[in-house]
Amino acid sequence: MAVEDFAWENEQGVLTLLNDAETRACVFLVTESAAEDAPGLCAVHEDRPEGCRHYPFVLNDDDVAVLDEGCPFPEAFPPPGPEEAAALLNLEERMLRGG
Ligand code: SF4
Image: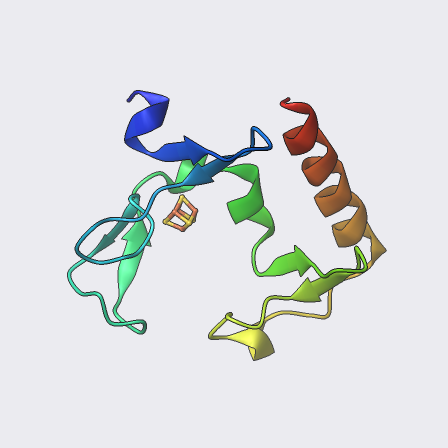
């Protein structure tokens, strides 16, 4: 696939996954519905982007790793530790450097 078929590049040069026009979900999510709780599977699970591998852990404005507020199953995950923050900060740094 060409990059432009699944991602767009913002003004900082960071690639962001596109959303499907009908389901409004990630272009790689195989689902039949636009409902937020619709079942679906990632079509590229084995090769999913690194940010997806860390989800539902994200960085807050203070660069602290937290559970994303949009995660529908927060009780299924332990609180993120310093290793998650370090991994996310490393990813963010590489994304902003374009690597
Ligand atoms: S895991 Fe990532 S690539 Fe896969 S469907 Fe979800 S957002 Fe898209």
